[in-house]
Length: 268
Image 1 (tube, rainbow, N blue to C red):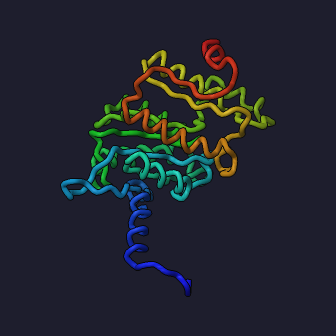
Image 2: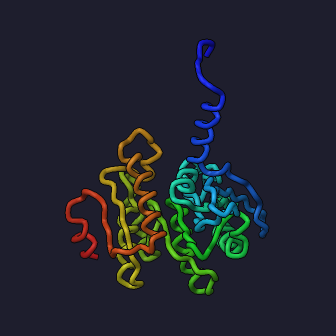
């Protein structure tokens, strides 16, 4: 650096340019409830023409890791990208974990945060009128799907507009007895249940659905960041979120290379 030739102004300008690409530093807060729950919010850095504070569609996410692990650190890198790239006010939710806290404690926490969001979204730059997305990974995807059903039954307002689920656990209670057959499965033992869930949403609820399928990969494969499929997953999450924010128009979409996927789905 001793022989560096350049102006301070040039460095400051470049630094400001890079900072604009990132989401605001995440804010941690406590949500009141049976046991104060931690949430972490992410907000894009996007100036408005009027100079007033910007407001963004809301995305509430629940982490995975089998209801026994994980916290608001889980998925931090992805939420930063989602907030910045898709223009979202993201809320990453902590919840009580088993075995110390058995069902329905964690689920009650998850729904309590959802209710809090409907009344407090502006506190983290959220605008429910622009979109109310709920999602999760694996166990968190299970929570998100179940929360959507409970919210619909209870008439939660504003209503959830879209779901963004990654490798969700969607096993029907009638199929629990099949689980021992999956104990030695090398790939993703709950994938087919998620495909069936998407099919039921499309056929019974007339929901616009988009599926991204990754062949021959294990559950949660994107944690291996050097895999080409992991890099593709980040792109697909961006595109999938965009699809949801734009109203999910275009019908039933499947991205993947598995032969005969549509025939496979129609066989259920």
